[in-house]
Length: 66
Image (cartoon, rainbow, N blue to C red; front, top):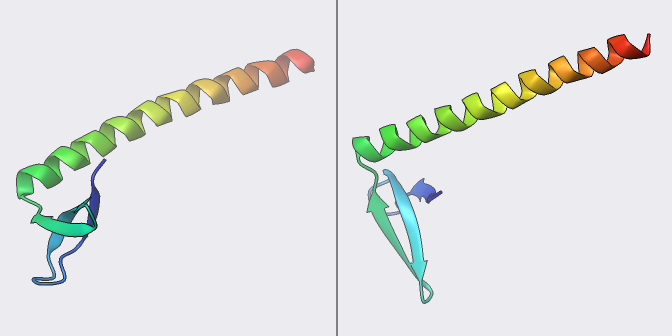
């Protein structure tokens, strides 16, 4: 995932890339932001599904020990 920071020149959000000690800033476009939000939503859904599965498994284990 790209690193994002504020551009020191314009103050807008931008992607940072460092090559040979030189830092370059590239402004984020709306499409880039929407793409990143979509990726984060997918990742959160995946982790949520895993967490729910583990909660069910834990509940089953607790009930079997009683």
